[in-house]
Length: 558
Image: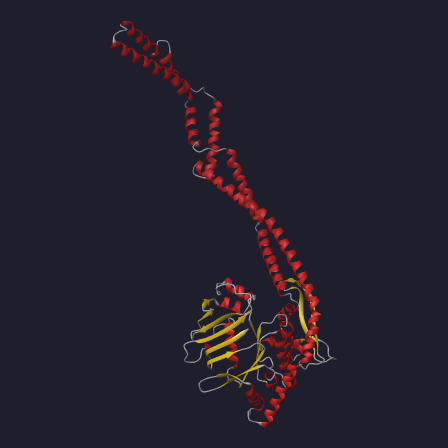
């Protein structure tokens, strides 16, 4: 509940303080005095755009501050604790008070605070939007909108969350459908790319490439080309070393001669050992030369050249050397894996899309059932309210027609009205006058908002009505406050409406700016007289005002 409202330097209002109670409260005053500015000030607390024209001329800023009292189990209390705007969870008993404020400067900038801490306007709106709702003349025209009519039906049916779920499910299914279309559009190109990539992988893998292999092959091929000459040369070298009378034999003979000269001479013994070592070295050299000798093979060179051609072709296509080709193979395998995953993902996407579509259909079926069940109940409830609002005999109908599944479900909703029993039902916009539309809007709000109303501000919703209808509007607003436990603030220019309020504030013009003052019980007759005749001292107007207050008091007693 809004318990206090402070407004400073907003339009013609220099400073205004209101202390508000629960129940109904009227806000009256002459045209242009500033009633609407108070509503605009509250709208700032609800996150409305910071309009620099709201700042009072010559003022450095406009300030609006509201104090709210909430039960500790209110969802907003939990939100405030989560956002660290309340120090801790409150006790189970007692009310929780929060203070919200908004400052607007002449350049259109502003700041928002909750409990003294700066917050975003979005968070401010999230908090206060759950506590206060403003119903103004603009709502009269809004109820002609098909989307608003569907929203009202959903609210009455308790299906607002279900409608949001349908919209979310349809959006998800639509997004998945778009992604699926994009995926299908590129599927052919991806498959071509995958075919090419798999061919390249097979080509490289089939070559069993090794780093440095081409260089080895070139050396090997060159050796094969010189095989006969090399074989002849090596054979001669081996013969010179191992043949009869060759170097090995001569060295061994020399060693034997030295050993036979004097086996006890240390100097000769050292020479003998050196000759023995030479013989062993020569023998090893002969063995190594023999191992290097190649038998001329006419196929070996052809095979080497063929292998060189394979590797050279791979290098031309995939890299400067074997290492780059193998690196290309690694990247190709990764790319193929991604393409294969994309193809597999396409199947997953199809499954997700089908599931999302089924989910949307199931959600919309539940919503449709709730709408069809609630529509006659809403019509009956609105007709009852219209009867009490001096529209006896009016018939109200909720028409539901099927449509393709969309974010709004599978139903098109429209409100129809016949103001007289003999008339045919027609859309609201075709039959309702301004005054009738105001009462229909009020009736809908009364019916729908009895299901958990917050603090509500009615900004001249009585526009276009008078006489008996005005009395009915005043009685209905007061009844709304009593029956729902809501705090109802009514900005009105009609004494028939103001008389039914439990509390009363008046906005008056003064040289210093608008003045907002509480109208005490003893002053209400004078204020209602002013509203009736423009003459607070008029005896006839005062008699009429007393009659209105008595009528309202009688209604309260009932």
